[in-house]
Amino acid sequence: MPTDSRLPRVLHALLHLDQNEDPITSEMIGKMLNTNPSLVRRLMAGLREAGFVSSTKGHGGGWYLEKPLTEISLAEVYEALGSPQLFALGQSGDAPSCLLARSADEATQKALEASRATFQAELAGVMVADLVRPHVETIKKYRQNKEA
Amino acid sequence: MPTDSRLPRVLHALLHLDQNEDPITSEMIGKMLNTNPSLVRRLMAGLREAGFVSSTKGHGGGWYLEKPLTEISLAEVYEALGSPQLFALGQSGDAPSCLLARSADEATQKALEASRATFQAELAGVMVADLVRPHVETIKKYRQNKEA
DNA sequence: TTTCACGTAACTCATAAAGTAACAATATCC
DNA sequence: GGATATTGTTACTTTATGAGTTACGTGAAA
Image (tube, rainbow over all chains, first blue to last red; front, side, top):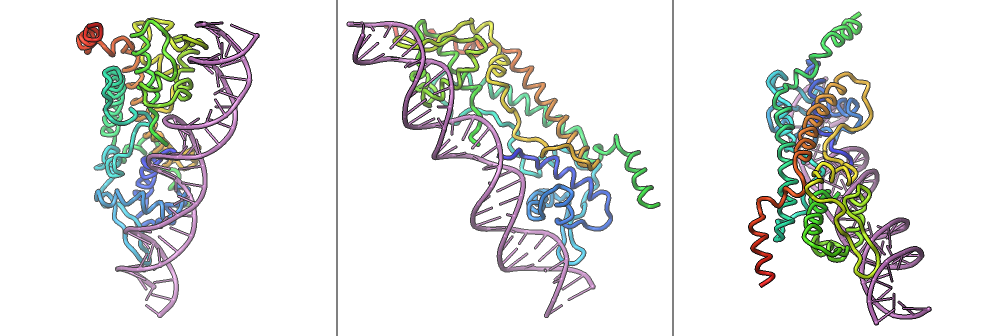
């Protein structure tokens, strides 16, 4: 299976939405993400349901922010995507009757749970708006060039 | 892809090996893990290369421990498996030229890295022998019943 | 009323582990 | 030495799921 890249992709899209007054079409977002409009619509659907963005049809339609990026944490974005499967690892399935199998599963699960907690905590501690903080100067210069 | 269950599976197998004097065949391990002998041999190959177990062919052959489980950490077992892909998540591929895409990727990677560090630390802090500690009494009773 | 754009469903493609089968090599038993 | 047991390895199929694609209905703007 192709690696699940939904989180970084929608973050990327949100950052672009924040830089535009007008709505951005799925077509345009598709070019930014190197994919096609239909996939973009699927990606964004969760964000719309979460109230982070809205979309309008017809001429001049597209996607726009409904909430400032300073008020959306990465954890909320992840949840809006449906909290996709984080790990490629896990136990094989049903709870086994063998005591040793259960011990092995429990130990694995414990490590994964701790790992997941760290992941969630990392995401919860960052707002989407924070992502561009290290690059504010660069972006400012870029815009000045564009205006000139 | 079916979920990668190699870690809990080989842990399970190691625990069984620790309970037997004689070698255990791939066939028998296969029954314990609900799979077939061929897959068992693949699973165990890494453990053999790591020096944790040995295998012998022919009558009475099979797998046996080469090192006490008190001296093998879960992290070492994970490495012996080839440090399989931990996350189902990740960025889509090549480093993008778009600054915003890179910001999104970096934030995602940072959270994943922290998460991985926690995972590794959890595994490193546990020896395979520790897994049965909570069940020592139960196992003792089971063996007494078996002898009776 | 034509065009644009989203919403959604249905399908194929790609990836990697699991599962399976087969067979050579080798060790034990008689 | 021959029969049997067991691993080592290769090659193949199956499975699961996101990505990618196509198509068409719906609704809004020009």
